Length: 272
Image 1 (cartoon, rainbow, N blue to C red):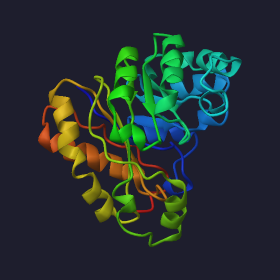
Image 2 (cartoon, helix red, strand yellow):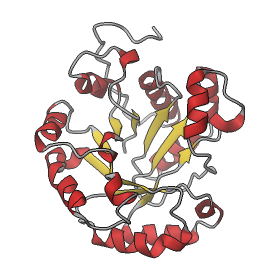
Image 3 (tube, helix red, strand yellow):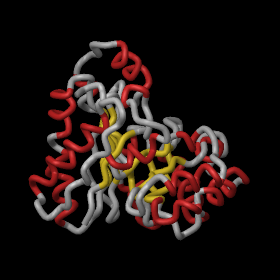
């Protein structure tokens, strides 16, 4: 039984982590979203460095390249083969490969997703994120495709963020860029993954995740190992918020081991 928590990145100027930042981040959080792999596949040397800077129980959820999921029509192309080759040094640190699909991908495209998932190496876990609201209104067909592949459905909970209009430049920017997704709290596998977007206000962010605390606690009691990623519009407080979420879940599941004591950066995080 383990709860992984993390952010959308492992380095942000506001955090003032020393270089290399990943090792410090890995003392605050035990998972991270690998968004950069969507835009460019790293080298084997870079990935080997990621492994060296993180403990064995740290977890990466790595996004597949956009040349596969967005412009490649979900095909096993050369970019995917290279991506799979270079991430091998992470070993078990690769928690899941994340198939984030564009808003144009709808229920009629499910056969393509089923074929794609069947073509992937079976020594990785897979997690799929969809952006068409139609999947949430009638989830059965997508759930069946994912169940057959042993893949998870990744919800992006933006309900708290879009509950009231933005009040800052960071919130206004996110208002234009983030998807408005219906809520979903159903786990399909033993490793559910949730992405959550809060607000600039810590109080609003915490209020918005209140519904998730008992859900995640319930998953842990069922023997699942969930991952919860915390986003805010500027992400300045995200590492501390991740640890707070972990603490709130642990209050309901005392057998959950606490996160390790943090490695303090040379300069403190801005909220201290």
